[in-house]
Every structure is written in C-alpha cells, then in structure tokens.
Image (cartoon, rainbow, N blue to C red):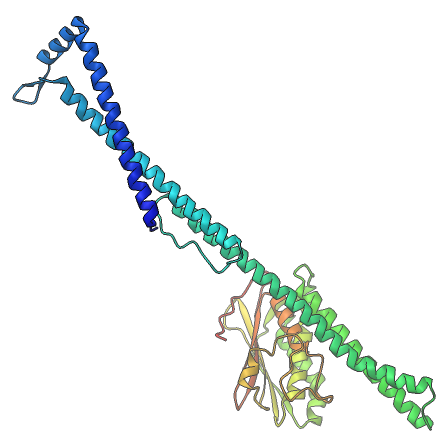
Length: 384
C-alpha cells in the first residue's frame, strides 16, 4: 500500500517528535540520577565497588563509566519505542485506507475491490472482505437472474395461453350469438374451440411437470429398469406414426440387460419427448436410431438420433431453454409448448445425469448419461 505525501510527512513528523521527547526524557533521567549519586556518598561508594569488581572479556576490561552503559541501554529502548510508534501509526493509516475503500464499495461501486497487498493478518482481512463482496455480488446476480427467469416464465405462459384462449372465446362467442348458418359450421366452431382447449391443457400439464421436476424435494418412484426393454417398447409404440412419415425406428444395444435405478414413468417421458421431436422436426429424415451402451459400471449412455434437418449452430445452446423452439418450427403443425426438452433435461438432472445435443449435416443426436445407481451424481464432461 502506498502512502500519500501528506501521510509520509505525518509519519516522519511522528518519528521526529517521538525521538525528541525520548531524548529529553533520557537527559532528564541522567540528570536526576547524577544528582542522586552526588548527594549520596554511600551510593557513590557502591557504584565504585561494582565498577572495580566487574570485568568484561578475556582482557578483563573494567567499567569506567556507568553513564555510557546507561546511555546505550536507553538508546536501544528509544529505538524500540520509535519503531513501535511508527508501526502503530502506519497500521492506523492502513486501516484508514481500508475503511475508505469499504465506504467506497458500500456507496454502490460493487465492481471495486480493495487493491492493497499488506503483510500480516491485515492482508487476511482484506482477502476476506474481497471474497465477501464477490459472494454478495454473485448472490445479487443470481437473484436478478431468478427474478428475470420468473418474469420470462410468466410472460411466456401468458402469451402461449392467451393465443388459444382468444380463439376459444371467439368461436364460443360465435356459437353463443348463433353466428353460424348450418350444423356443420357449428361443429367446426366447437371442434376448433375443443382443439384449442386441448392445446391449453397440454401447456398447463407440461408446465406442471416442469415445475415439479425443478423442485429438488420432489420424490422419484425408483425401481430397477431394463433400458433395453424400455427402448424396445417405445420403438414399438411409435412404429406406426414413424411409418406414416416415411421414417424407420432402429434399435442398437448390447444383448446383455442394462439395468438402472430410475423412475420409469418420468424416463419414459424423456424418451417420448425426444422421439416425438425427431418425428416432428426431422424434416427430410428417414431414420431414427435408439442406441444404448454401458461403458462402465457407473453409467449407461443412451442416444436418440435422426438424419433429418440440421439444428442451426446458434440454436444448439438454447434448445433446452423453456419455451424455446428452433426458428422455422413454430407452426401449428409442429409447434408444441416449447417445454419438452426443458422437462427432459430436468428429469435427467433429477436422476443425477446429464443430456446434451450435437447436430451435423448427417445426424442430430440427443445423448443422455444416466447413473446406474440412484444417488450418484455424474459430472458433465461434454464440452459445450
């Protein structure tokens, strides 16, 4: 820490004043001692005897003057006092600077940190203060992100609910006012309102599942599952729909069973969402592959891949965000709630695993890593 010119001058003045005061004190003490010795013959004789009987070194030097020894001792004492006074004053100046920096940060300059490097325990205080400020700033940023996330959630839900609700009110209003000319037209209005109501219910259901999976205290109905059997059942249930779209579902997995502890219903929802997305958005694709492997005794790796249209590079990092849909796929024919992949990611995380996506001109792959035993938290080693 650098002192200002004014502080340096004050420190020098402090040293000079202390030295002068100590010299005056030393002189006073010597004068008083001399006065006492001269007025006390017995003390003089005692000092003389001591000097005659004390020898120093191998050459047996004698003490000829007690004043010289006393002056040397006083000078050593004075040096210690001066050093102590200057160090004490210097630390007071350091503390004043630290307090000034704290006031500066407290006034709203949260990007500022105490820049001093000081020896001793004071540096630990500075380091702790800087760490505390960093922690507070991180907490404030996290709180702002949470508030922003809540606002975005409310905005997106309101938007996605308002659109079908407006249609429902509009068509039912036509029915209420008898603004139809035939029974077929009436059925058309009511059918449209019914489909919009189902769309709203789908959004509400997905939102409920998403919020439940985001809550860490939501229990899982754990059981021992065979991943191979689950994928085979899913492939069979989607075989007809895939055939209608000119796509084939293929399964690639080892012959030996791959058993894990998981919530079968929720994992089924994950794979259901991924296969549904492959059918909806795999434009131009002919194949959907379900692959599973067990690289070690800790995890299984499952991938759902299709050879359809590539996901744009800019969208890869956002596909798991709430209500996000890749540009160009927000049509009524394919657009869902935008919560499917967010739900899938939440479910996988609740099981201690992780999910990521890669997309090239040939294949788009959603890869899931799941722990075999419940309670194990896998580390996401995928470089995003």
